[in-house]
Length: 389
Length: 93
Ligand code: SF4
Ligand code: SF4
Image (cartoon, rainbow over all chains, first blue to last red; front, side, top):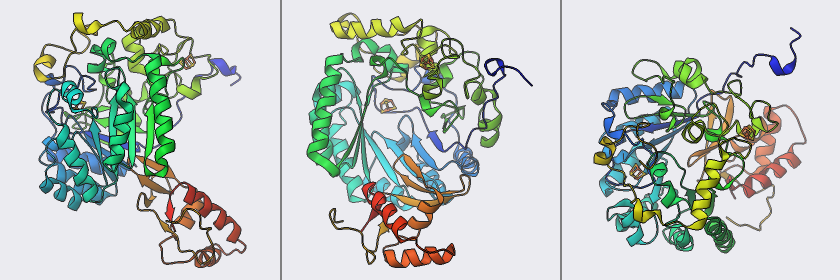
């Protein structure tokens, strides 16, 4: 065929294997984080997968080439079969990661998880000051996390701390880093909150100002020099302050496969919000078919689905048009350019949110923070209430 | 681990405890796994690292590779790669 390059139908390239399997074992969680990325209507989720289902998912995913396995939630320690699942994953050759808030992590469970072959625990902290920590998570869990960190070190696991950064804790970043070092963390992820789900409800209260971010970056840099090899610090900037979007999930259906508590398979943990897309369930379809053949995973693969300005953009391979969920939330169309991009016709929505953050409008008074919780969740159905509604 | 010592022929490097070296059938490659991440190694990197067991010296690793691939003169390449591997903290000396 002699069709000119631009109008040739684009066949998405055959994707590689789903290297990363994220097993969201449960939406149950004792905490109430204001930035929680679980769906705001999580309380409507039907039955959790049974142990047998998860064991099958692990085997199918490994056979399809998955190699990193993350057990998360909610709080995965609330699943009593966690050790069984970890043991199977380990036996299959996965590198096993547990993403936990530390609640429910007793010495007995630490031992059982070690015996099961767990490779790594990522411990999340909300902040280094107990007051703010307790304020933000609504429970008194801070001292417990220090204890958990000690157990992690004691059992010889690499110690990875994760702290979600936002307007209310970003100014304490020096203390957060120092504390991570004190606890023996080898890696520290300072991930600026991303604005989905509960964090989207609370966006105006959580979005930091540019000056706050610059200061935090400066301090992070200074601490990196001070601590050298003792700790590796990753600072993830919030994309709202950028003019180009992130390459979300490293590409739709490219490396990540999330399985939610009820068995829905997703290319990222927030993709369920997207309209007009049916995502398969591991109860009905095996992982290999889900990954390579399902409509949900193929829809936004590659760049054949793009509209302008992305379609003809010279940078499209770099960011693949950004995040589909953000495009849907802010531009109302999951196939639009991510409004973080300054070429997007909806970019002003991002700019306006950042400007509000710059002015430091105290939205907290008129609009209280929404703490994640089942009662709050039951009152909400994703998409029915506007953000902040 | 000594930061300043140079890697010599009698050094006995081993894959760092921070990483797990493993053959991945689906990728047809050796990979280094670490918390929430993976480095996919090219063939020669994989073949070198899988021999870094803390018992064999660099000398022996080179000899073994030269025999396995029926070639000679790999010493400089192996040393250069190990230098890089040390910078990445993939190996301990
Ligand atoms: S973000 Fe907080 S509330 Fe949400 S699952 Fe994690 S620990 Fe629980
Ligand atoms: S127009 Fe689309 S592809 Fe180009 S930089 Fe913006 S988001 Fe990326």
